[in-house]
Length: 141
Image 1 (cartoon, rainbow, N blue to C red):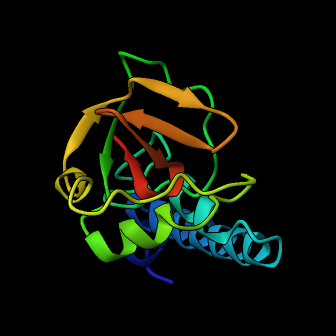
Image 2 (image 1 turned 180 degrees about the vertical axis):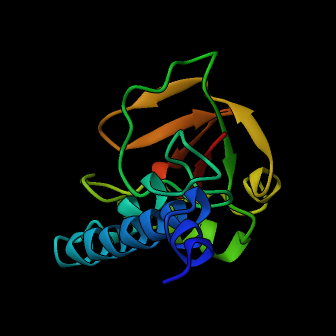
């Protein structure tokens, strides 16, 4: 091969692209493994480059986080009021009881950001503006 071809084959750009392709393949394999373990969504969120904190934009929490700090941690409630109501009317994953839905009272929470007032381990929920909201209806901000 000509010297130009050899230089092109060994270029830093080419090496970086090859490394990126290999990393993508490893990440896809890891997400598939996570799917088999029931953790695929969480793996995808952790591997999202735009959000290195592990929280994908507009994605509700998929696992309970009892480590949120009252009066400091901020969450946004999902936008979809019907889905929000459905999540409130069934026990959150890992909880024994549902938090319940207060008709004509809780709709205004949907789509808005709030500072967490408290953490309820029993219901796997966060106290927001006087209501308990299941963790999987919350988006960590």
